[in-house]
Length: 393
Ligand SMILES: [Zn+2]
Image 1 (cartoon, protein in one colour):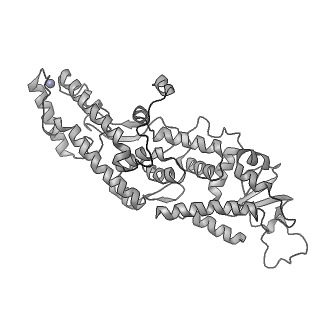
Image 2 (cartoon, rainbow, N blue to C red):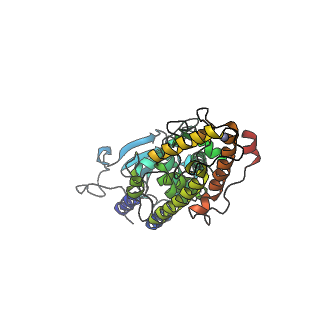
Image 3 (cartoon, helix red, strand yellow):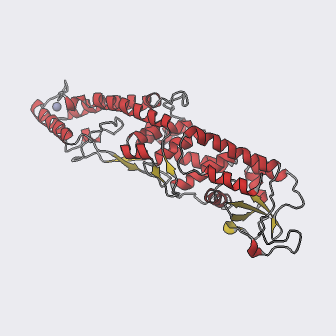
């Protein structure tokens, strides 16, 4: 396999439109296979020369090399990795200690005419320069680069993708743990990971953003997470990622979105079907959950029927004005809008409605894997609380 072919494959790996999903998975496997192939056969490819170069004559000058110097570039580095024409000079021992894949790659004896730059061996990599730079920077910062920080979602994507591909266990775990904080598998964590508007005039409000999560992430990134969860074997992210997708507008679902790196992420047809079918089920639960508003049902324990009827009628009118409110397809909103001091319901009604509402809320959460038809991928849902969770909560 030639250098140019490997670069071509590298570009294919980063096809911007990630559809169809199955093809992408196969491509990823292919690229992983390529890496192994390189490790076994041609870990050090011959350096490119200009056409005018006379092979075998005087050694080429540095400016004849097509590589751009990337970051990291360690002056005492003893291996140079090249991706998409950008070179990174690092320490082979750190790579070998961090990854079995790199260890195997470097254990293969190199041919005498292997490419070198300033006497340092050069390895052509089939990855994007952006992914490789982020991963190497994380590796060569002693693992502290993102400690206590909120890296951008695209950076976490790079760490997860290459962390999985090259078996960089620490980086993969860090990325997976961060994503789990955003797409948790336990209800109380989920409630803590989102911020909502729950007071009038927005009524039951919206889930408006992620909150208190260790990634700089937007709701639309859930589309990318649906892909990554399946490609990188993190299926437990799927129920909540698909739930967030279900709350996106039709434009994002139909056309996808472009992340900060310029990659267009779009749900694969099978995932889009899962999302749409799940949304219908969520809408049914939300309708049941809020039947007391729609049908103006007084609780059997009401002590102020006149006040409460008036407030329920006001709620219903508000809902009819803006069908998008009151969680039309979101039964996972908290009950703040019922318990609000501005709510003109008697306390007994508030508590009665909140209890009923909470039951449906829990039912919706427990059904997420089934509603989105990922229960075979995520057989244990909802995840039980651990002793540590209970201590924290
Ligand atoms: Zn009442």
